[in-house]
Image (cartoon, rainbow, N blue to C red; front, side, top):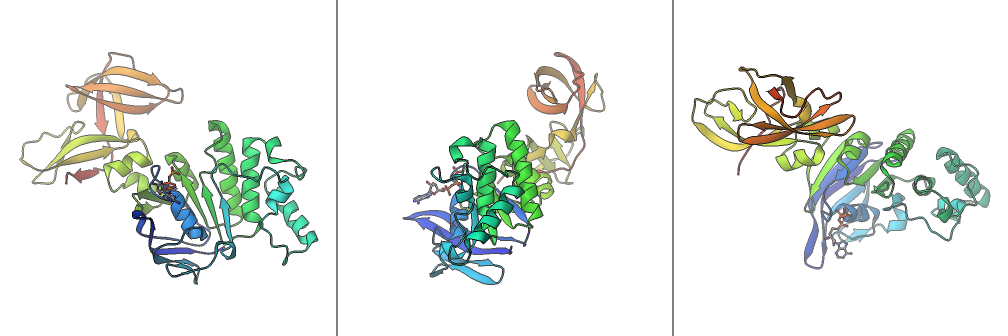
Length: 346
Ligand code: ATP
């Protein structure tokens, strides 16, 4: 395994710029999650790292080795990348064993070595005895595991996973994901996981990179990107968030719907505040020292519920854990306890 250093990479298809002066680095053995909306360039970034797309500018290094430069490209087959494309994409006409050993070089590996590596990979993914099965005879989760085994069989420098779990249903997705991440960690794999799923990004990665319009606009640990988002939009893409109008006065006090402070000064800045659901506490009954409201709607999800609470002529939605001890129409008071994340309007 190796570290990854991407420096000022640009990629264009025709006149359309897809990656725009993008820089990103990942220490050896770390897993990064790349989170961003459809079309922002995630797959293109993976394909550029893999050597399948040539950048117009910038450099890519694996450890100290320069593998990609706009004018010089180490071909894809020499980059030693383990690539798990969307939905696994196994070769349907090859058995599980042949899929796993597909990337092993026949000129440098004997038949016995190939058999041995395949066996080790099957043991790693817990699928001993499945050698001769065809992909069509496997469940979705098994196909994902085989795709990962195929990627790891070549002892890759870096593993790139492009939404490998998107075809799996919710429960299986969680199970397979934690298995795959655990496997990558036991192998001390340097990996990039592309995902649309914010929880998947937070739970799986050491580093979360938020991508928009061909750039990485924020990177940090899961805790950093969740608790210190650089904008309200990023806040929403990393977890549930209440985004409220806010203002700041000359003394620096912030005023918003849930602040119990009285705004006596003149506001000098207008903007938004971002509040995470767990930073709002709801109490039964009215309290003159707090902000008061009425429960207007309860959407019950079992482990938690989203309460819509009317406050004066506005309403906010707050997710609270079960058991839910509130009723429709009930008067409640609310308190905000968390950091003031104020974003001035530009
Ligand atoms: P998704 O989450 O939907 O997979 P993404 O973030 O991975 O999206 P990319 O697949 O990298 O996005 O595509 C980014 C943009 O580049 C899209 O507008 C896409 O249409 C365009 N694009 C991708 N590959 C090519 C290509 N070979 N030629 C021209 N345009 C391309």
